[in-house]
Amino acid sequence: MVNRTAPEPRTLAPGAVFDWLDETAEQRARAGLTRTLRSRPADDPVLDLAGNDYLGLTRHPAVTGAAADAALRWGGGATGSRLVTGTTALHTELEQELADFCGAEAALVFSSGYTANLAALTALTDPDTLIVSDAYNHASLIDGCRLARADVHRAPHSDPHAVAGILAGRERPRALVVTDSVFSVDGNAAPLAELAAVTRRFGAALLVDDAHGLGVLGPGGSGAPAAAGLAGAPDLVATVTLSKSLGSQGGAVLGPRRVVRHLTETARTFIFDTGLAPAAAGAALGALRLLRAEPHRAERAREVARALAARLTAAGLHASTPDAAVVSVRAPGPEAAVGWAADCRRAGLAVGCFRPPSVPDGISRLRLTARGDLTDEQIAEAVRVIAATAPEGERTVG
Image: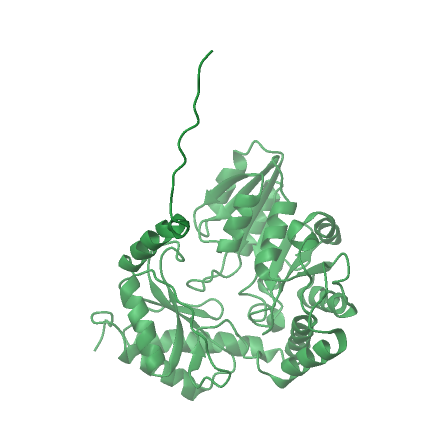
């Protein structure tokens, strides 16, 4: 009989169990990847090109008024899961109007766009499914792929031919192609029509994250699938956020009615999550109705993006060509990008700062939101500040 003795336990001071966090924080700091929270006042005078308020509706009276009315009528929270007590008549109304606006059969509202993406990817796939995911997809789609029990293949960015090659060699009986409609880093649009043709040729479904397309692309801002002629397609599912063009909070999945029914009954981020707060649902509904009444807001957002890109390029900076309302400006590295963004803020302009690992290509950049409510004077001022604070050597012209 072998005499086995238990190993001696390691003795550590209680706080020492997290010492490794300090080491990793130091590593991030050396790489210029430290991230910090910055509280902003309600009356912040800084010109905001960092958020995702594409249509400038977050503070619109029609939106804030709808939020206040919903909170007064329904309360501060939804009180429970959507399947228990968290579905109000307001949620149902929002889903019906959102589906109608986007040309889908049905919609299902979630507490965030992130949970909507997790729901779609985990509930619509299983071990018999092949997922083909664009290399530049948003983190929420990547996390959904990781949580899915499917066979996941990473496809080259915006390459329908490569997607076709992966689908042609599949062994699983089902397949789902996953892509952003507008990629959040540079603002370039996915080739949705070509991807839809490929998925249909190989009997696959298409999942489109339209977070940055809703309110900006398509007729009156009805989204990228509508712009590509795919609204209401029986083999397409779209996810959206309510926190960007609609100036609120939350997300939704839109698609065939049987898809929405399946998610209602099986999606864990729907079943086990508290419903979207009534104020957020009311704000989103108010913004949606405003957009339907004033469809020119979508085109204005695109106009602002084109103006920003053209003027920044004319100033000698490396600006992306926008397909929607996102414009990025290349920076020489992570630390330079952080310093550039900080200099812009000190000059009265808030811009986004994207660095690895948030950017799939490893290139650091400033990210600008082309809000549809910006005036020509504000556009000119934004360009002036960005150009004046540019790191040494970034401008290609004097």
